[in-house]
Length: 293
Image 1: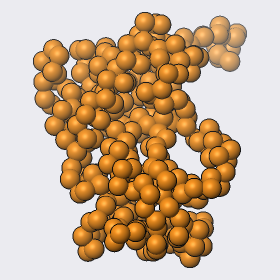
Image 2: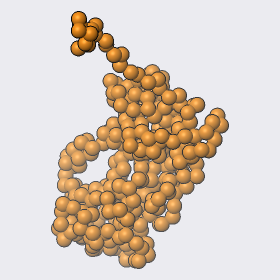
Image 3: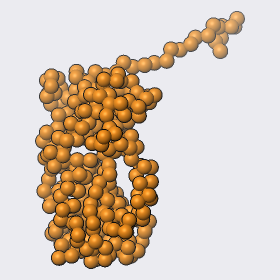
Image 4: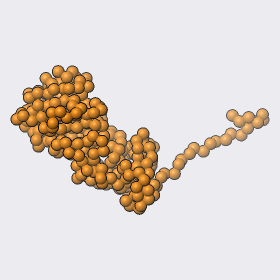
């Protein structure tokens, strides 16, 4: 699934070429893309409008169409926006015909990526407040913020990082890479770290995301740049998808486990597994018949 670095890579590529271009026609090729708004209604709303800018929030792309009208899109697992791509490119779900003869095509083999029209700045803020937490590169993100969010939470750190309502934009790849950098086991309880370790984790999250940005994102399955090229961060993974290979820090073999339903990669030596906690069984004395309650 495209995560923050992949979505930001697409945004940074598309924003300069889309700004000021008019959507002369929007053809919704898959009615599921703009659901629950009907394809014809969605086209009528967008057509004739000028794209003022393209921004990002978490894993969402936001097309600013002026007059406080926004088209919010999510790539989900396999979505891509391709600029001036081959007309025969596979899995097209929507086609934007733009001024000066340019095109923008949304492709999505698995058909999970949605689009939604939101009217009004307040409604847009409310939309994201209900879905997303702090941005990792914002001033509000640091170890103290992580510690406050995680306080009292007994679920795993991996699950905590994947929860978009806590930290926006982190997915399976960057959670693994950040936890390895911070030398924290993914099964550690989210609220169990020392204050200094939350600082380490916050820094590690930013480092992992920045490495992904610098490499133009990671292409494992379907992610592509707006021009159809692939990202290269998959060639720089420290542990993710490196099962059986030596840890780049200590040489111990990288292993794979399942955490929060996701394949999770780690170094068992650098990331010490937390001690199992078990409840002590209270044994009550037997009654005269020898039976225990």
